[in-house]
Image (tube, rainbow, N blue to C red; front, side, top):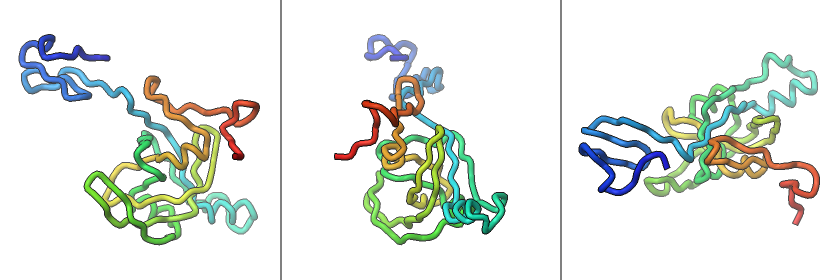
Length: 171
């Protein structure tokens, strides 16, 4: 643990809030333990297939590379802000009910997003985030791509995709 715990060890009106230590109302140290972020690329799958088949030039494939995407194991899917979905022109799959920290709400679900990270890729749906919230990488893409968050090293770990320890299970 980065900070000493217990009120007896805190001096000069220090206060620990879970990820930061405050002294006299000023943050004097911060800890980001447990936060995992990654860089990934989201591509319009329809564009990618059309380019692969020679119907459009590869320069016309709509794609975004996103840095510092939060790996959120409480989210189930890839979650993108509306502006990014619009830029990629992903097709609407429908509207779904979603549980959030503030309760149940409706969200739009988009389809045919190709996700590429750490040398692996897959096709996924994504949930539209309201406003300009930061993108989130949820557990479905993590499982499908064989990725596991390492909260100590603050990075994603590639699980083996071959041999007796493969992450692919058929039962």
